[in-house]
Length: 141
Image (cartoon, rainbow, N blue to C red; front, side, top):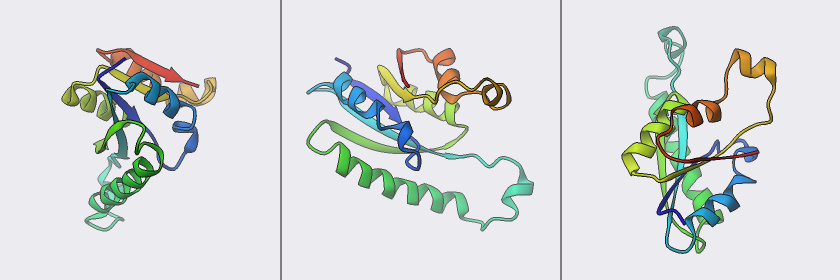
């Protein structure tokens, strides 16, 4: 079993956690911890952010934390020790940074089915995590 399992999800897309959650719990076992991570995407260009309220990203992070706490209460309570984290930035980079900061020994991440055109244009966060992680990564489809 693993001591610290980082489990990044997109709370608005159940496909990012429905199949992966049971495996994250199994990998943590009775004594491990599941660290639930949600990421508020970095909007990047000032052109975009200039149209948003000044505190948009901070409020988005607060809202996401509340949603993740509710998710943890409904899906993790009584099943595993857990902690909720909210990151901000580019998804793959944020996942890798949190894994390192937490001292995680496994990342469990869901991946959408391959779509060559979409992957060519956008790339896959799971793919980036797998390529750059210094710890094992379990990719769930």
